[in-house]
Length: 413
Image (cartoon, rainbow, N blue to C red; front, side, top):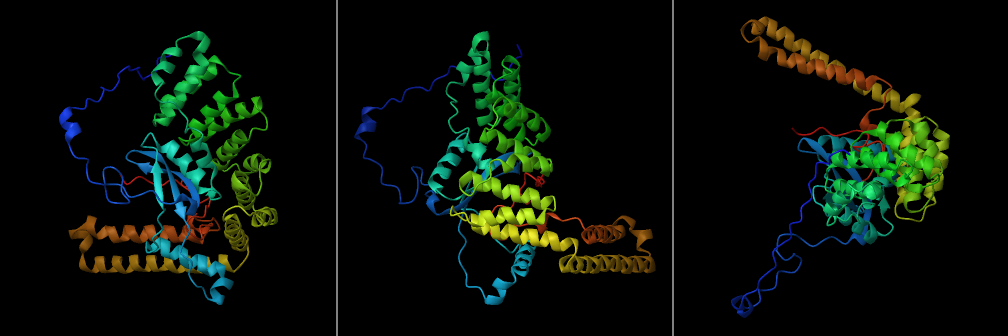
């Protein structure tokens, strides 16, 4: 039996003793309305007004942490008729504002897995949000809201009993995952799978633990084992589709998502991801068909998501043979030429003033920056799509290609 890195503790909190002097004290003054008992935290927003619940992995220190953002509806602004007609131009302007950092988009509230209550808070928000858009990752997170951390030491002891080993290791792995020890969770699930290799729940948990740590290939292996033992399970097919999607195996992801696509709740999110798989395979017409079904949804803002994705499909198709490709190539070519020209001017000046002989390291910096700009410009002139060229029209609308699951952010360290 492999050793587990968590030792059980039987420590209990000391009972609270109230003295007669404490009882004679006057009750404390009421806290200002809108704050908690300590007067530090503002009241929780009304999640019934939420537009979407989206979960991502974001950098935290030297690693990553799960974060669930609850987005509200943006303020409605009067738009001119010509702006409504040219949706692609409106998207380009919004992307330019994002790149310049002048577009401030903040969620109503964010929960992250650095606190043990994260899983239950995410589920509570999802329940209160009603018909808000909920992505598949949030659905996976809420699956661990009922993990019993109090009995963790009991699970550790029960794992030594051969008759209870598999079940105890499964529960122990759930506890490890809930407190953010993903390595310990995967070790516990793997030990449980060795003890009981025919339990689909164990394989599902192992696959999801890999999924949460970007180990997508092992996630596919574990989730496929779970699906083989429990065919047709929605959670397993969804998680397996996500693992394939992260690996950019869009054909395999399409196969999993197609079985569960619909127009309400989680099924609408799966149809949206199905359309994205078709779009990434350049199956433009098939993607439009799926988005046409999604437009008919009466759940949340999924019709708005469908409109965003239709625009993204249009851009993708035009980029192969259309005005967007030519306009983009001309713009990137001008940027590259400007960078090269700036580097040439600096080189001529440096040579005239003999800067390279006197202060060579400092004089070479502008040349390095010019070369970097030229390289980025050449990359932009290619036919490959860049991260900022997908959906992401309005705040609170999911764009599966723009998430950190597909394009991880770099840590500030």
